[in-house]
Image 1 (tube, helix red, strand yellow):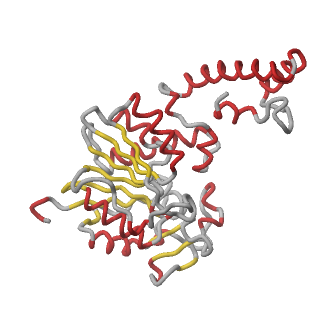
Image 2 (spheres, rainbow, N blue to C red):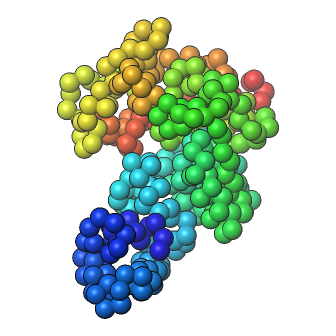
Image 3 (cartoon, rainbow, N blue to C red):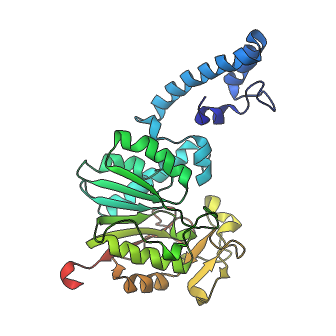
Amino acid sequence: MSSFFQSLTRKLPGQGGTSQGVGAFGRWARRARRRFGRERALEVVAGWGRRAEERLGRRIAYEPELIPPIRLMRTEGMDVLEEWFRWAEEWSMLLRIYGQIRRDSQVLEVGCGLGRVAFPLRYVLSREGAFHGLEICREKVEFLQQTFPKAHPNFHFQHADIHNTFYNPGGTIRPEHYRFPHEDASFDLIFAASVFTHLLPAAAEQYIREASRVLRPEGRCVFSFFLLDNYRPGQPRPQGFNDRIFNVDHPHGNHGDDFAVSDPGNPEAITAYRLAFIERMAAQAGLRLAQPPVPGLWSGSSPTWVGMQDVVVLVKAPANEA
């Protein structure tokens, strides 16, 4: 039985712990064990699970094999499928409006995770376009490589073994030394969804510098941040953002009030930047703000928020201005 369906059923009879399942399935499992015995019951229940999952999968998505199992989703903080689709559509919208994505765009995502944004972009990009994703968690990349390219050969995913105290503590490459594995001026659009929210300044500076290198003239970067400009200590914040992990109250390093973290003991858990700091790093890399930042819901400071996090849109100058 797949991990997706197992996540819906808790424990099956004879597999340790309680035999309580979810709703009717749990009752079926107990009946099967009484009728057939433990080993045969497991085979019967697994068959029920596969058939139910097939029916459920067809109702979840047109290509259900692209939806990762709940076990993997939980590594990105999701317990509910609705959050998977909400994030996917949010970023598809952000890239259409602020990234000016086209059908034939060459797109790079830094930190593609389990393909939450790649999932809706398969409808946006034609075969003349292409999507490339970089991800530091090997298991996520393996899932994507096994599923996505079969149906969408213009979607590519690559593992980057970058050290991060929160997501990849065993990584062998320091983020401030990482070079994107792509040629200069390869992409029309580069985006990072909730990546700079876990980067220290040296790594952020390197990522922005590398983004500029592989970006084509007049290309765009769409990066999400927690902006200190929007943060109000002690102000109530909506939904889960009221958790103290989003209290970015601790300056870190020698950056004054331009940079702060929520947990000094694990600084890459949540990081926040002041816009002026981002502008300086961008300017040094040959990028500039394309527009004022787009406020996010997280801080509770704007009645006209668009996404969950603040979005910074950068643009590279035309070739004749470089």
